[in-house]
Image (cartoon, rainbow over all chains, first blue to last red; front, side):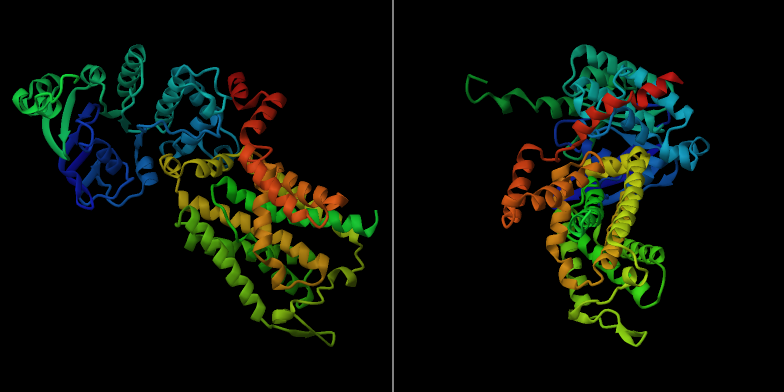
Length: 258
Length: 305
């Protein structure tokens, strides 16, 4: 499905990502974790084409994606959400989902007139379904900027789903969520996968990552330091060191207040 | 109506085109200081069409709009990859370049024993279509407002369409628009072309209304005003810039005690509005609430299916 080979991104002298190899199989929920600044977001930005890579390749469903702009990659089936919620605040909730409809996946349903001057009945139905799934059924005519935080997160997720992606990149979708919202999110992610979408999840909230993913890769300082099932990764020595430090003697608290 | 009122109303109508032109770019997030160039270019092209080549007025307007639109797309293709301030500066530079070129263009032909055509710094005289056809000022004003209505309806249709949403998306988040599978550069060039053509219609009308155009009229102040109209009137609907024009030319021009201080009052008004209503009187939020009052909206329609 997704194959990264030797993927690197350097910003001047800073190696944000260095020689990452990663294979995500179709139908997986794949976790990508690591401390802050370890290269997770950079990886997502490279996969969907926001950055150009310094070295290495991105293959998606067998096609080389290097050099292709984000809109081409979306049409090929790579959608994403953002770490900081990004919506079109001046459009209504309904319009946010309308513009996200990915015509390249379903050309027959989008003639010129319905595509540009009014959604087809089928598109309307699809948008109504997405609104319902996101518990935003009664908010369709609201401006996106008027939604509450949790609603905006759900809309962002629904919008990514509206593009009918084959691969969905989730960049810290649980940030700022309550425990119950995280549970709901986990269910949404699984339901999405069951509908045939492969998912790459970048996340700090470990309950979510350990709960939904089947494979996890761990990054630190731009390198992949571990790979395996959630259980294997949790037991991994290098991972524990990356998250917790090397040993107690080297990181003795300097003052008592810590 | 006396000629003065007709002239003021006609001016409002013609300036409205360039206001709509700047507005269209404003909603896509581009601040252009150069829309006067397309207004002026089209004034010359359309003026030449009737006075030098004897074409009918509708052909002249069409030629003017197409010339301006194509030029705007060409300029857009070169400059729209620049972002923000750099784009704004390049539009200004291009417009000034245009104006200076028009100052040296001398292409005259003999029509009925007289030399007609652009005459460099002397401007372009004798665009006499209105006199030759014996068209009254009032008739021409109706023609102006007829075309303005057509453009306005077209813009309102665009705003209802997906293209309208795409333009607003470009204005709020370029990367996110790209992430919806849309080629942002292509849509920006399209918007630039449409905006250029709209300014062009105004310019073509202007040349025939005044019978005389000179490069000096298409200076940067015209472009700055065009921008201000959208910012005053509001960026939530195409009616916004028209409100802006009406306030400036209609109200400020008409109220006697402001006369002479018009530019000062206008500048102050822009400053005050930008502080309290950064996206104008009819901004998106107010337009949305107004719409909600009058209709049940897309979503309600969807649910009935």
